[in-house]
Amino acid sequence: MSDPADLTISAAGALLRSGDLSAVELLEAVLRRASMTEAILHAFLTIDSAGASAAAAAADEAFAAGDDLGHLHGIPIALKDNMVTRGIETTCSSQILSGYIPPYDATVVERLKAAGAVIVGKTNMDEFAMGSSTENSAYGATRNPWDPDRVPGGSSGGSAAAVSAGSALAALGSDTGGSIRQPASLTGVVGMKPTYGLVSRYGLVAFASSLDQIGPLTRTVDDAVTVFEAIAGHDPSDATSYPGPVPDVRTALDGGVAGLRVGVVRELWGEGTDPEVAAVCRRAVDLLADAGALVSEVSLPSLEYALSAYYLIAPAECSSNLARFDGVRYGLRRAGSTVEEMMASSRHDGLGPEVTRRVLLGTYALSAGYYDAFYGQAQKVRTLVIRDFAAAYGDVDVLISPVSPTTAFKIGERTDDPLAMYLSDVCTIPSNLAGDPGISVPVGLDSGGLPIGLQVLAPALGEAVLFRVAKAVESLAGSDARPALATSEGAA
Image (cartoon, rainbow, N blue to C red; front, side, top):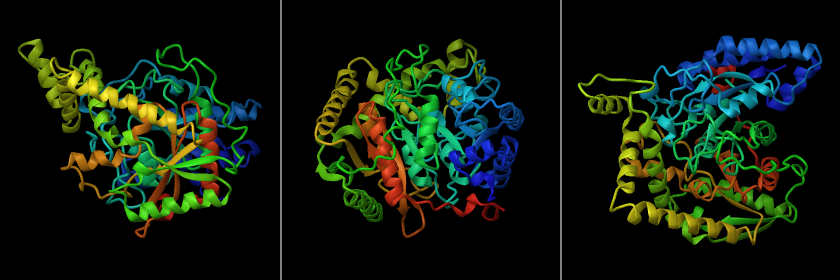
């Protein structure tokens, strides 16, 4: 048998159930891979070896007793460090939460544990999920397993790198403007953002509450379906949780694309898209057409303004959400002669430059005299985006575009140019504004050997057709290449 760290969830599950592999052996393989790659990648902030070992041993005991909790039983999974975990430090990669040990688990963590998953640890991220490269972490940047001189994308870059390298079979990330899909594309894995409200945000440290959504990063579309099924569903603890049933995403998963209407979004293939990225994604679309999909070009004119609207709405909401981190209740506290001085000093020392930039921008956009001119106008643009998507889905079943305009860029290349960094998310942000689901599927490599992802978008609660098309993309054009670092030889 090959190294168990390279298995998919479905393959590992089959071996666990046949008795040819134990959960303890699977975890040991994953931890062994992490021990070889972490010095290079820094995908994790915390590896909970003791807790994971206990969970793996419990899974083996359950299997021996004939107690099978489902597809994730015994599977090692990593968590982005903005999901609270009882007894394990949760920092959001920020100094201001250094040392914070939550007293409870996020709902998604509870559901993974209930499904028998083995939680490996907490992954690195851009501070408070604000970034597109995982360079904004207060604890150091994460590197891309395909080329350690390059970024893994962000803000869920640690989760993406861990799955890509084999130090977890799957991971959870959060997607506010593309923070699951963009790093998935840059590291050659599958990354999926569900419909807003379909996965509970309870226990997710909020960045922008009307945009944030938790989703899976996996090696295959089948595995993404498995993790999605485990974490989706109504949660009374989350006021924005969707109260209806979770879409049935398995029944038609292998149905192919014959007769499905696929729209190529004109505005998301424009200026700034690397020619190699465009060519690889076009090839994938052509293969869908050859398989019987009805492909047409679709225009969503409001997407021209989506990036600008997002960078007013998201900072405004982060300004409000991050006001709680003041040095009073938890995390970092600096000295001061007054409460105001203590708060100002704690926030100055505890929040990094990108978070500070967005808090200031958001506070300004919400201030008296500017609210209508900035935040109010941005919300009107958001309404136009929602309407354009709704109109498009009246004509097509799914929409297609590149995930990222470029492949992974070099570490440090965009840190001094915030606008260039923000443009990394130009293709993914619109669906966050609309609240619709999206997925990144690896479809090839550029001439430098770096991964390229194709984005599939679907209407709200359209996860069934989303996964169906994604599975077809994977079958027709998918790339199963792995980085050299994702092998014992490459990591050594």
